[in-house]
Length: 437
Picture 1 (cartoon, rainbow, N blue to C red):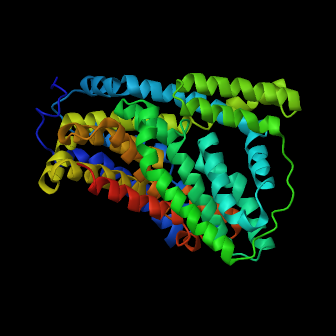
Picture 2 (spheres, one colour; picture 1 turned 90 degrees about the vertical axis):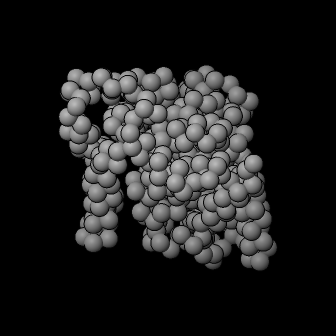
Picture 3 (spheres, rainbow, N blue to C red; picture 1 turned 180 degrees about the vertical axis):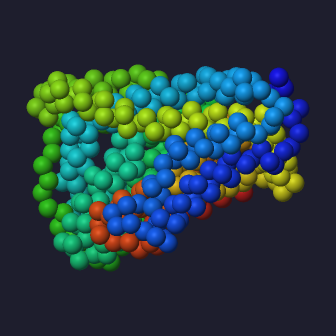
C-alpha cells in the first residue's frame, strides 16, 4: 500500500473527480429544481439528499486508482473515519442534538426570547431583535432554530411599527449567524475545531476579534435606524425565568472553557430539572425530545463519515496535493495561505449550501495549507467557521434564508440587501487577513 503522506504523493487533479461529481449532482439539481423547474412547497436544494450525492461520489472515488485493491481503499477510509477528531466530533454531535431537543421541548428558547423582549423599550425593538437573535443562537447553537423562534416575532414587530418586513427579518438572520459562528455547541464550531485539533476556547478567542466588532457596528447602525423611526410595539409575551436560566448557565460554562461534554450534559440535566419543576416536561416528552434531537443530527454524522472517507481517498490519490500546488502558485506567504483557506471554504459553502458540510470538506485541505504556510490552527478553525457562516447567511438558496423567507412570506432575495452583519463580518475577516504579520 502507498504511504499516506501528502509530501510523497504527486499532484493529481483527476483525484478531485468525486467532489466534481458531488457538485454536479447536488448543486446542479439544486439550481434546476429551485429556479428552472421549482415545485410549490419544495426547497430545490433539498430534492437531492446530500447523503445520496456524497454516497455516489464515494463510489466514484472507489472506482479510481486501480493500483490499489478494494480492501486497501477500505483501509484508507477506515483510517480517515477513525481519526480521533472525527470520532470526538461524532460524539459531540449526538450530545448537542440531545441538548437542543430537550432545551426546545422545555421551553427554554421561547422563554429566553420573550424575557429579553419584555425588557427592551419599543423604540429599540429592531436592535433588540438582533441582540436577542445573537444570544439565542449562541445558547441553542443553531441558526435555523433561532430563525424559527424569532422570525415570527420580527414579523409582528414589523407590522406593529410599520417597518420594513425584509429588513426586520434580515436583522434576525444576521444575529442567528453570529451565534452559529461563535456558539460552543454549534455543529460548525464542533466541525471546525475538531478537524483542526484545537480547543474551542482558543478558536472562540480568535473568532471574537472579528465577530464582535462586526456585531457592534451592526448594533450602531440599527440604533441609528431606531432613532430615525418611531419604534414598534412588541406586545406582551409569556415567559418563565426558570426556563431561561439553563441557557445562561450553559453560555457561562462554555465561555470559561469547561469541557464541551460536561457543558452539554449539565445543560441537559438542568433543562430536565427545570422542565419537571415548571411542568413543561414529562418523563415521556423528555425522552422523546432528546431522541428526536439526536435523530436530527444523523444526516450530519453520516455526511461527516462519507466526507472523511472521500477525503482520505482523494488525499491518497494526490487530490489534496493538486490543490496545494495550485495555491502555491497563486499564494504568497502566510496571508496567501489564509486567503486560500477562506476562499476554499466559501466556495464549498456556495456549492453545498450547508456550512457544516462545507467545513468538513474543506477542513483536511485547510489543515495541510495551514501547516505549509504557518497559519496557527485556531486561526484556521476560525476561518473555516466564519467564512462558511458568512456565505451560509448570504446565499438566497441556503436553508437559513429560505426558512426565514417562508415564515415571513417574502422572497429570500429580498432579504439579502438587509444582511448587515454577514457583510460586515466578511469585511472584518478580509481586514484581519491583510493585517496578519
